[in-house]
Image (cartoon, rainbow, N blue to C red; front, side, top):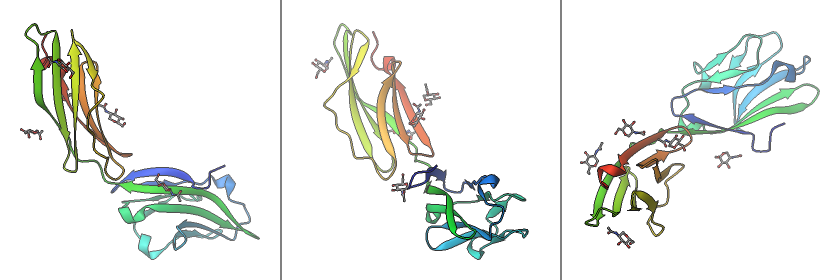
Length: 199
Ligand SMILES: *[C@@H]1O[C@H](CO)[C@@H](O)[C@H](O)[C@H]1NC(C)=O
Ligand SMILES: *[C@@H]1O[C@H](CO)[C@@H](O)[C@H](O)[C@H]1NC(C)=O
Ligand SMILES: *[C@@H]1O[C@H](CO)[C@@H](O)[C@H](O)[C@H]1NC(C)=O
Ligand SMILES: *[C@@H]1O[C@H](CO)[C@@H](O)[C@H](O)[C@H]1NC(C)=O
Ligand SMILES: *[C@@H]1O[C@H](CO)[C@@H](O)[C@H](O)[C@H]1NC(C)=O
């Protein structure tokens, strides 16, 4: 089980990470069991019939469970992003599981505004241009409606999403949504199309 990169886990800054290993996966005659961070640091060490030893950088951040090799690492910060490895030593060393952990901040709020509305006198056709802004970026989209059937025009601009987050503008049940999301959070702003395109 487990791919080379390990299980991908995304945690919001300040959140907790569960490092799980099944008790049955740890050989009864083990000499030492470690949760390691990357190739450098040891997080916690288990010896048979002893209390787990938390390494100093992790003091106060580890919650362990009696007779179990699973631990909870608390209050994750960006620098905690990386690969966590469960390594057991018997006669030889064995990797039991790996987690590839990415710590992300929640995304900033979004603001969807209507820039322009163009309606034919008989109200049968309506074009609506909106802009969605975050502190980092903005994108504009035009929606074209004919007899209240709206399509997103194909030739619109969009900016490259910033690090790990994406900004999408889309139409869903006559509501325009702007959705700013990453792996741990999302924020949205919306406008009802009929408010601007009556008919
Ligand atoms: C860990 O996950 C991140 C984000 O999905 C990815 O970019 C990176 O390549 C992965 N690293 C490893 C060692 O698998
Ligand atoms: C959104 O932007 C408009 C125009 O810049 C501004 O008037 C409005 O207060 C903003 N709304 C929010 C919730 O930030
Ligand atoms: C809406 O846009 C389409 C395509 O650019 C154009 O053909 C149409 O006349 C526009 N309608 C209005 C009401 O501006
Ligand atoms: C916004 O995007 C996220 C991630 O793709 C999704 O889970 C969420 O339901 C979306 N929210 C709305 C209002 O569409
Ligand atoms: C649209 O935004 C308002 C706040 O501006 C929110 O109360 C409402 O739930 C949103 N609508 C949908 C369908 O998400």
